[in-house]
Image 1 (cartoon, one colour):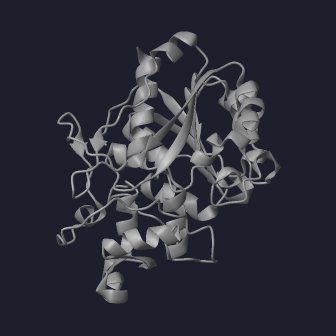
Image 2 (cartoon, helix red, strand yellow):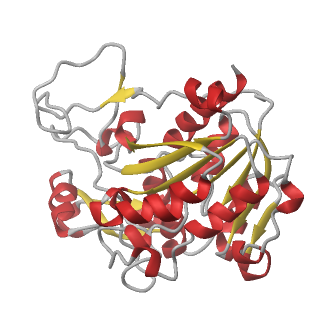
Length: 336
């Protein structure tokens, strides 16, 4: 993510978490106005990395349901955020609008009050499930009637992140000309497995116009075992078993990690602790720094909190390189 100098656009962040979207927009040259996040430890992460940012965190100031957005009207070009995705997650109960964690209404309230030139909302792939088609129409598209909206899917591995992570983006513009100029970000990278096949398993020639996505072992600087792969989707440490220090998202993922000889459980607070605590079968035990790299965070971005809190922030975040590409595409549409 090459740092772009100021693009003369401002942004406001909702549901900021560990800062995936915030960092992507920052690197794309936006002026950060404010971040809002309910979980207190996330505020510590954001302010420790960007002391100059205006961050509202915790139940007192970070609860978006209590915020009057009207003071921001006229000062924000782009509102971005990832409304909590558990109501639509394939791994969850998929209650949608009936789930108390559904925060789409609050995101929409902010957009309709602030009236930015554009908005960017991220969510899990499950929201495209046919069972939520009516929800998307009635509770998202119809309630943002002042915006022309496009929704599309992005996979993190297409942007250099060594992880299979498919997410959905909703991007809306108030001005139809801006909307017509917007281009969905195209892949910048390509993953080919050891036997020369693409992620989908079909034989493919490497596209010389695209950079190569590293596998997990290569990305972590591990020795060459003649087998490498993309990481399965990394889970959030805020879900599942209490205070979990595992990034394992499914039983199928266990085999993928095992084939790479990387242990997805018992992630440690730092690399020294991880190396001092051998994993099963002498597989490589990860630290939180390793997991952050597999999510696309630069080494310079430091997370606050206990291991499970760090994994929660990482697993809930938009992969920063993905956010960066979306932010650049929005800026190009608004500035042309």
